[in-house]
Picture (tube, rainbow, N blue to C red):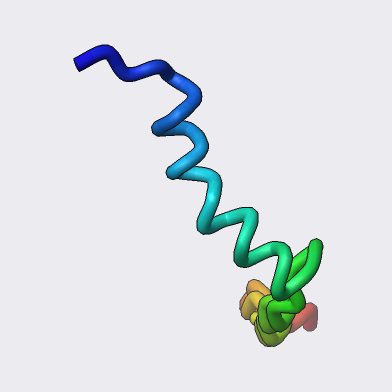
Length: 54
């Protein structure tokens, strides 16, 4: 059986072309949700032991 490379390529691309013919290009899919910004974590300050000067 002698298959040319164009025939399988056509059968692979035909559903894509039919889909784009009905839907249009670019497809109107919903944009990805923007992730919520993460809350900033505060770094605990290094507390130096208080020295009393008397």
